[in-house]
Image (cartoon, rainbow, N blue to C red):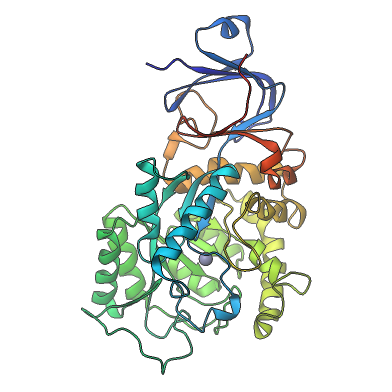
Length: 429
Ligand SMILES: [Zn+2]
């Protein structure tokens, strides 16, 4: 049996509380086996010993809105072609491998899928488990489940599309179905393929050129999707932006609100009551603002985007104060916000700098809250004895300057997922 590894002299951020200096954390197998103040006894214990010299040891982070196969997707193409048809399937799989490597080398130890083409999330999860490629733990998603004619139907309806089979149509990342029976079949089609996160589009908005008040799923369709997923232990997340659509989906038990541009106090109250997770993904909106790199790509959407960004800036501290489980995660892989070393931390900075949330709280969203949304329960997200050893070591103090997480090639010294090491440049003593 492998001996434990002791990390001494850590500045410990456990995922929740004030950081503490002079701490020792020990890892054995896949778990954390000790968290205690430095002591001679621990330094003398049998095992491997590392002196962190005051570097920060903290839980690994979660990216809560993961598109594994986006690798430079042009916003101008969204709405013109079906997502997932921009490249051949095996090319997209190569993009996944590249993106998973960026994530793990950026300190992201968990990702929660928000849709992918083919079976990419599930297949990558298998390849990581078999040790073929490096990558974080994945809670896999699958295809967008859409009703016909929703915002994920390209405008070019005159081009040939594959025939419907068994009432469903699958093109790239999109699955189209209609009616209660159609939705049940669509969800079961995904569940059979080991998808654990069903992604739906109850409304438009959030930069998507589509009337925000248009309702793309009936109440019965929505209820069927949620019930069918829950029957199998899967969860449902929805791109949903208007108050009316949010309230309906939350009350029916949808698990994750994505974006939520039109958030208000009534929606907050409903989310608290139902324990709904929230993924704001505000970096995307910020990038579409007149000052951002993505601006003008969607001129008709500029005003709604500005309105959404300003509303969420105001609401986010209230959503946080209400105790909603907020998790960072954004549409990385679009042309102006690529997956890449440290890019995920750019989103964290938005919450600190634009929304006035304390860095420690944002890091709690990314660690403790992320693990909850991963479904790890009390098994991840915090540096505590008995929990999974998902941890990173940062040379510097991200609680004082969250921006250092944008330079992982320089500042990240250790990345560990369930005791398995993906990066380690720390010297043993
Ligand atoms: Zn997305």
